[in-house]
Amino acid sequence: IAPVNAVAAGGAADQGTAPQSARPTGGDPLQAWADKVAPVTGIPARAVRAYGNAELAMREVDRGCHISWATLAGIGRIESNHGQYGGAVLGADGRPSKPIIGVPLDGSSGVRAIGDTDGGQLDGDPVADRAVGPMQFIPGTWRKWASDATGDGRADPQQIDDAALTAARYLCAGGRDMASPAGWWAGILSYNNSTEYAQKVFGLADGYAKAAQKVQAG
Image (cartoon, rainbow, N blue to C red):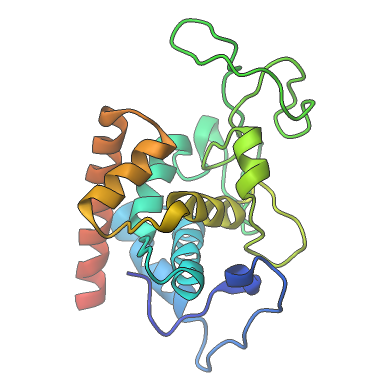
């Protein structure tokens, strides 16, 4: 789990409607934790921080969900290599150096058919929808669950804090308990209805959590 003495950033727990809580004295424990976890997991520290921040935020608003940063990291690895897809670099502001936009969902071989729902506003495509950002949200889904994790007044699917918190809220929907086997599998399959996908997320999440455990134990 993310460090218990850290606080969620930017009013993330209340969707940016309140200012961030005062930082604990002695530095930022979430950042210190992310800096230690990053080398042993191969995840950029900026992404680790975003996943951990989403876990912290959900602890405050939905204690029964038990979403873990490691599960979010497993999804983030598959969807965009933690905001690094196509050679992008994840910046200090949590945004990739170039927008991450998926293939057109036009019904071609192996691809769902989803007509444009956002006028190309998020994905630049006025014909068919495309998944966007580090957590690869379809514009229609983003519109429903969009979250402002940084408190800047804007929910941006390309910004990894916003995207991670949105993914966490989506996975926790309907009172789901992501710490139970049934709840976890139902959550991941709601994200992508593929058993192979869920198995990959599980393997990645398990590896990330075990690596981070060793850091915390040390």
